[in-house]
Image (cartoon, rainbow, N blue to C red; front, side, top):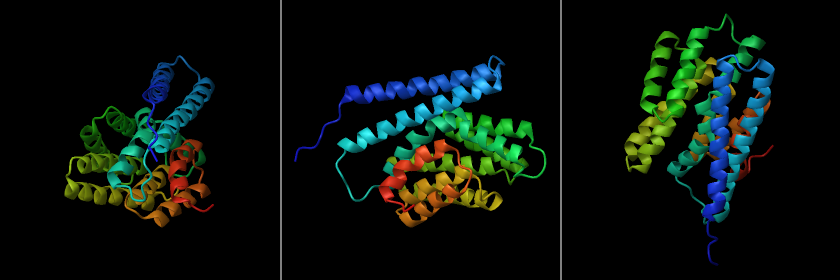
Amino acid sequence: MKQKRLDPDRLRALEEERDFLLASIDDLDAEYASGDLDDADYRELHDDYTVRAADSIRSIDEFRNEVAETKSEKSFGRSVAWVAGLLFFAVGAGWLLAQATGERGANGQITGEIDQSLRQRVLECQQFGGQGMIQEALTCFDAVLEEDPQNVEALSYRGWFLVLTAGTAQQNGQNESADELILSAQANFDRAVEVDPNYPDVRAFRTVVFEGLGEPEAACDEITILETLETPPIIFELIAPIAQRLDCSP
């Protein structure tokens, strides 16, 4: 059977839609920061753009899967590259972190008052990563963790940027370095879970890594845990393809 060929025009249209929505999220964040939008309008528009961006990114992934040759084994590098595309907009916009931190503060799940300046620094670390400045992001997170070793957001997102770095290393044939980076990332994730087992972002990141390492049961376990938490819908949008591929039971 002849393999179905990718329609570059269709893919280009999907990518343009994705880029437009990501830019719209950035513009919205800027307007909100400058005081041009009130909280209600910001949340409504931000949620709409975020869901549409997730749909667009998922459509790109599904479209590529339709035309790709079916293979029973997938390398970790391919998995990392796939998920990097899925989560990039969330990391770049800082949406997951901002919402999760705000919700914990509102619901009182973390004792004590949130250090707003430290939270802002963590968001800035994320923005470095969203701009492709991974090393700068890691250095930034290191500084945050030196001041607050139990900062669950810094631990989680530092681990995620290490995963992205490992994916790049493996694509360059640096398998030994990639393995070491993944071990470091897992240590960050494990520590984050110890600090706050109910933080959904780190559960999503662990899902990705477990799938890439060929541990489907562990990946599905993380998805099951996510279903018991107050997980933002966007996270379920992002991990849905993994759950489908692994046929995770409800």
